[in-house]
Amino acid sequence: MVGTWHYVLAKHAKAMCSLERELGDKHGLGPSEFEVLDRIVHHDRELRIQELCDEVHLSQSALSRVVARLEKSQLVSRGVCAQDRRGVFVCITDAGRQRHREALPTQRAVLADVFTDAPAFAR
Amino acid sequence: MVGTWHYVLAKHAKAMCSLERELGDKHGLGPSEFEVLDRIVHHDRELRIQELCDEVHLSQSALSRVVARLEKSQLVSRGVCAQDRRGVFVCITDAGRQRHREALPTQRAVLADVFTDAPAFAR
DNA sequence: TTGCATTAGATGCGGATGCATGTAATGTAC
DNA sequence: GTACATTACATGCATCCGCATCTAATGCAA
Image 1 (cartoon, helix red, strand yellow):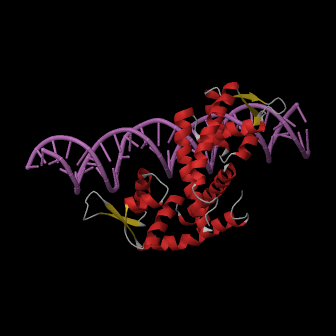
Image 2 (cartoon, rainbow over the protein chains, first blue to last red):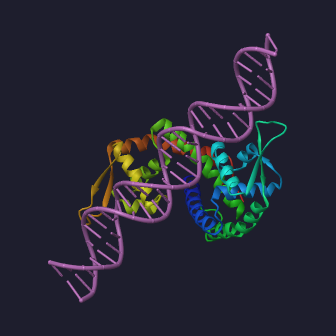
Image 3 (cartoon, chains in turn orange, yellow, blue, green):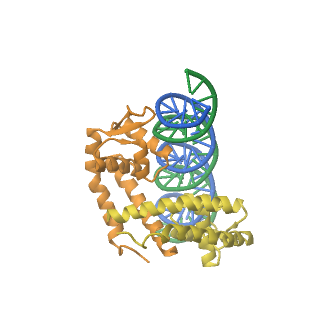
């Protein structure tokens, strides 16, 4: 219980710190930006902000800003939803796909480094 | 690998959010504040800032500020180290011990809630 | 002793986050 | 249609964090 929590804390801190550095230096992405790109690529279609909100561990306001940053970097585009004009759909651009493709191996390498040393779960 | 990472992300987000709310509302403590108090109580002696830095997942600067907040709340006291006058030792106060004693069940309850539903580790 | 590198901790600063709230569109009851 | 509640997303604000840097104390060499 407490052991599990400490395991989660340790791995989260180590991976997050490493991701921030590696993704930032090599690809100009923060962990949240990568996560959002990754979710969109995974679904392979445009997504509503709300759908993304259910998948990434961010508040709605934080997500709104991540998308704003991605749009500013031309990695996604935002459009109003025709069916519900309150809604916004987020669409990945070609540059966004490419950036994600470049960054994916970096993320995998970090995760491998963080998670392979120890058994999958430390009690 | 990626699955482990997603597990860590999900549990971290859920537990952190819950801890922030519960510890904050019921005891006026943030997760970092509780963590520092917990480490000191666990060692049951005064600790150097640097020692704490090795145990909590915070940068030295963040830890310095957490300790400053705790001192402001009278839960710990800071003193210069006689042997090395650059150093600072942190000493928990009676109020700090009591606050920790009160908050511990809250933390345990949150962790139980977050970690009991699922198997200890989701592959 | 003097001079310089190193270490412990504090602090300025910019950035990311969550909460509360604002704005605009939609749904619903009358 | 009108009035009000609700929903989707954006934004003001305060907080917390990490990085870089600062200050002061220590260590060490000449």
